[in-house]
Structure formats: structure tokens, C-alpha cells
Length: 254
Image (cartoon, rainbow, N blue to C red; front, side, top):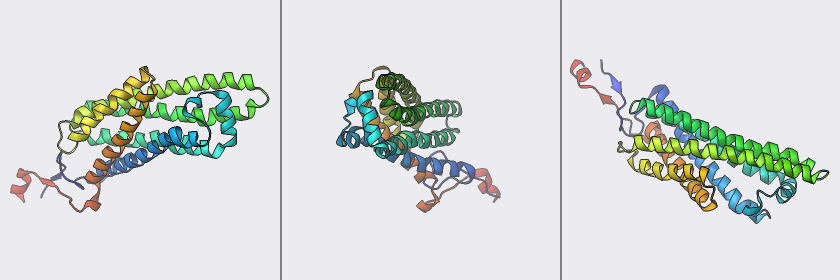
């Protein structure tokens, strides 16, 4: 009887069972997370400014709350379909990454997955604060502008802190996973990108410069899409190139 097993660098479709399903779903989640993150970035730097809320005014309570009251659907589209959906999908991807590399580096993969998931949860909490927290201040702003402004600053500071947590978590996870990927032919190139992604993500948490944050955001989008594509390609049976390794001992006994 032949024993089938997955090789570390087998081609697309080389995984079966629960592991293959997890990695396949992780790849899909990575691709969708890249789209959601791209939409969130475009929303902040292009869509909202084009409708009257410049990037530099998005932390101004008087400008933001008035704008949000007039464009509630647009704010929801940016905050929920971008800011919230992206980290939730990233959690699925990071869990699948930890599953994918558990054979190559079990301890590092688990640690990186846990840290990355914690970081993604930080981004999700920040998005919820901006959507739900700021949303409650819209009705409060008209009768009590000063009180709404103080509450806005408090909530915004909390959201920024969770964003910093997200950057550190995702950045550290990218660095650790990148170190694992560098030793593999399939993931070698994206391993170098992981290092480029993780460094500005971690730095932007301590040096909140808009240019650094923009660079980190763009690199993160590329990283999510590239990793998601490679995982989907590796685990998808639709590629038509399913390969299995057959051990020498099993081959002799066949």
C-alpha cells in the first residue's frame, strides 16, 4: 500500500484533507484581504478627500463629524468594507500561514500566527471604534459641540493606539514568516517582500509619519495578495497539477 505525503515544495494542488482546505481558504482570504485593504487605502486618500474630507482633516472632530453626518453610507463603506473587513480576512490568512509552515518551523509558525492574529484584531478594534464610536458622536455634536469634540479626541487616540498594535503584530508576523519562507523555493521571493513589509509596519507604530504609513500600507496590500495567491495556487485542485510524494519504502512494498 502506498503512503502519500506532502512535500515542502510540491506544486499546486499538492495538499489534501483538512490541511489543504485550511490553506486553500487562507489563500482566498489573503486575496480578498488585499482587495479590502486597497479599498480602505483608496477610501482614505482619494475617495473621502474627493468628497470634501481631506486626509489631514480626518482627525479634526469638527470637520469629520459634520462630514460623517452628511455621508454616513460613504463612511460605512470605507470603515466596514475596508478597515474592518481587511483585518478579519487577514486573521484567516495568518491562521492558514501558521498551518502551512507548521512542519518547516512549528514553534515559529505558531508564534508568528498568534502575534499576527493579535495585530489584526487590533486593526479590527480600531475600525469598530471609528465606525461605531464616532457614529454615536454625530447626533451628540449638534447640541454639544465641545463635548463631542473631547469624546472624539479620546476615541481617536484609542483607535490610533490599536492601529499601532496592529502594525506591530502584523509586522512581526511578516518578519517571522518571511524568515521561514526564505528557505523555500516557492515562497523565497515573497519571503524577501515579507521583510520589506514587516520593517515599515513596525516602525510606523513608533514613528507615525504619513509617508512611512503609506509605504507600509502599499507593501502590505502587495504582500497579502502575493501570499494569498501562492497559497491558493499550492492548495487548489483546480490547477490540474496535483502531485504526491511516494516514499521509497512504500514504493518497494507496492
